[in-house]
Image 1 (tube, one colour):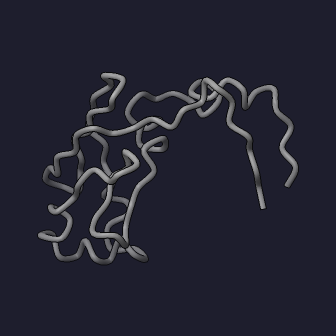
Image 2 (cartoon, one colour):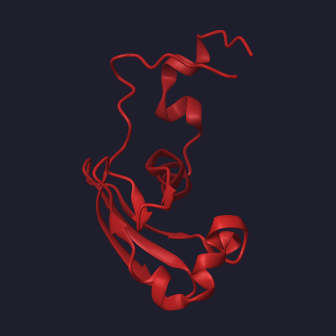
Amino acid sequence: MLFVKRGRNSKMKKIKYVEPLDGFRLRLEYTDGVEGIVDVSHLAGRGVFAAWNDYEFFKIVRVGPNGDVRWDNDIDLCPDALYLKITGKSPEQLFPQLRNESIDA
């Protein structure tokens, strides 16, 4: 198991708005003002994302209580991972303390 302690400047990015778009894409807006479109089509039809085979289900996406993206209570996507895709940043750029921490696995 892998544990990483998050410091004071490592708050999880929170989504405040999500809109489903054609082709399994999502328009996202974050609480820090970052906006963008992320393509999640590579997930469609795989594992729990087989539920998206019914495209109407994909379109019921909403922002969860923790600022994540979710469908019902069964499927969610990490807002940090989506933020990295939109901004093109690396995890170390988003969480600088990762550069200096040793991780015991």
